[in-house]
Image (cartoon, rainbow, N blue to C red):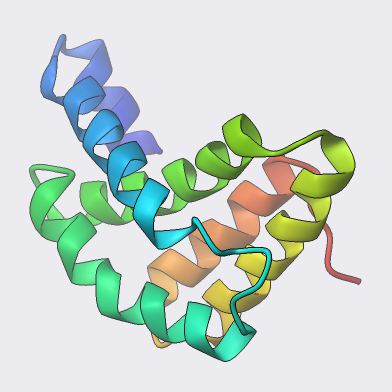
Amino acid sequence: MRGNIQLLMMGDASVAANFQRAKDHWAGLLEDIDTVRLSVLAARLTSQQGWFEDHCGSTRHDGQEVMVWTAFAYLMSSADGVEALTITGVKLLEAFKASSCSGEVIADAVLVARYYYIEND
């Protein structure tokens, strides 16, 4: 989040638009998270990394940050309680780990999951 926070500190209003755009995109990508197979979700994440890089930041890395943070934030806002967030959050984390997303995206997913107290022990 360092890149996006720096942009916010400089008054870059496009950051909020990038987060909103990502949230709207996640609505379609995660609508079936309760039922989709992990391998399908992992493939979906892999195929969408480029979209986030192209549409959610001024740099590739900014888009990657937005991708991961908004994925978990989207689940948080749509979850039906803490237990539901934990179940779907663990599934999302496992999907990121099983994906072919960049190492930066996967590392950010682990970090963000910890931030939301999502563990996959």
